[in-house]
Image 1 (cartoon, rainbow, N blue to C red):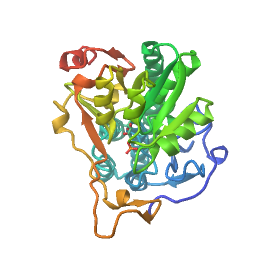
Image 2: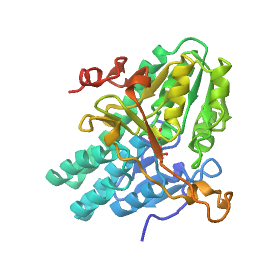
Image 3: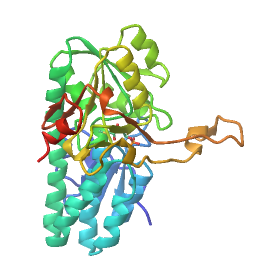
Image 4: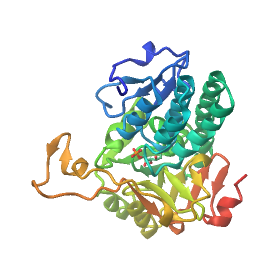
Length: 351
Ligand code: MRU
């Protein structure tokens, strides 16, 4: 059947209030625990509409289709998907389908395993409760990341960010955009430069939308422009999110992130990665072992459904790249900032 492309506004959702703490939310579980509402991020910024997922399989499909995206947000959505599976009494296949919906973001598997364990041992209510707690914890982690990261930024900074690591990509508030929001609130931020992030345009469509909603000054760059602004001394810091951080501190994030890290190092600009601890994967030794999602060629050869490359020409489309730990100034987590980005620095915060 699949999730229903039903247009619902946030005020009509059958929930007490969004757990995101914002006016909108990437994923919410209905008060009765029988449906998951996902803000359809493919329609933003033109339309703010929610789809309804009634089964774990619907949630998995919505993750595959990029209705909901961003590592922590797909973790939250999948946690709610497990709650639907528990209600339906069909855990095993559902957990596998959810965990394998996308390969790179470790938060997905982490959330499915965590809530899956509750579902196997407990009731439907226990599972809903645990999934909502995971959502709340992610928002709290983002707020802590924001405060810790804002402290690291110099005064009157222009921050460059890539993709969308905001409220839409998390339970709420955001990781990289959590740092931006906290820096803006404390008067430390002058401007955000947002890469448009081809081909899904998460920067142009989502980061720009979120920041505009909050009144944070933002200007868009096409993905090839960053070097120009680094060379002119216009970028004070880079802050990005992550999909998976390996045990040695290598960081997988949206394709294009590695190039920014190289530019930042060449221009002596700090390069920060903001991510909750659920993105840290100590079981993966280094970036070499991280599976990089390969997406369809036609997502690159077409723009908004219009072919822009000659017929017969195909495109490469890795969804993510790996930034080596040595290029990362610090990893900002809710447990603290890791300024020594290596296995020892990460394991010092592990528990
Ligand atoms: O393909 P996407 O849109 O899911 O990719 C998202 C990113 O790369 C984000 O930077 C990352 O998931 C961190 S979100 C807080």
